[in-house]
Image (tube, rainbow, N blue to C red):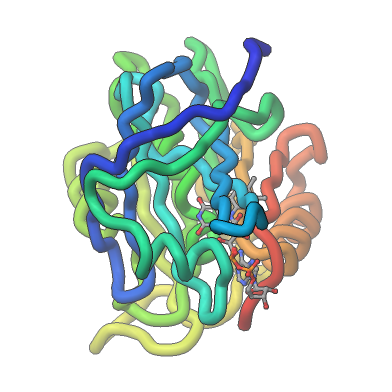
Length: 247
Ligand SMILES: Cc1cc2nc3c(=O)[nH]c(=O)nc-3n(C[C@H](O)[C@H](O)[C@H](O)COP(=O)(O)OP(=O)(O)OC[C@H]3O[C@@H](n4cnc5c(N)ncnc54)[C@H](O)[C@@H]3O)c2cc1C
């Protein structure tokens, strides 16, 4: 992997995604091409020299060059996400380094197996980079996104995901609302469990998918177990843990 050094990115836009999630578009003086699924580290330095560092997945696809998009969920009392929410404006500079990570990545090579993406909350961010990359490929494997959120207003990238599903027969969006559903909702309305995963895996028929699972640690672990129970080999299940559930 190339040398990863800290650099000062400039915030060129801030896009609200949901009431508690914002996307920061960062222009990079030294842009290094990334793979879908990789992340950047972001470091804040206080006046006294105290530093806080967190990882954020890249939401933008590899085809988007010169800048990266980071989508951040504002955690109550979150040290870094709270600062990004309240203390950062367009034109500000942020210290970042990346791209980082060589395991939870999708290259979209020809002949790649179908994709099963499972995300909880902001865990959808690297999965979105995968979907955005997939959308730009000529030959796309079929893909299913199972996206678990508490309420309808928490669906990050809703408009783009729905448009993608409308335009592409090979992409299926499965939303799962664990608490509140939209009126008349006939889809999933419970935490992701083994029965749900077995149903989703069965959609792929004989060809087993490559799974990418990302979100709070508890969700990732239970989904990885459920996918194995549904017949996926451990090597076909890639996971990324974002941290505590915060639930
Ligand atoms: C590889 C990787 C990629 C990541 N990508 C993203 C991303 O794309 N978008 C994103 O929003 N986050 C992402 N995260 C999580 C992110 O790094 C931080 O952990 C998160 O922003 C919280 O940091 P904070 O300083 O705001 O909160 P802290 O001050 O560290 O924590 C405040 C409180 O929130 C709890 N908490 C910490 N992290 C989380 C969490 N992830 N979910 C719920 N509760 C939490 C803590 O236990 C604590 O109680 C990623 C993490 C990893 C390891």
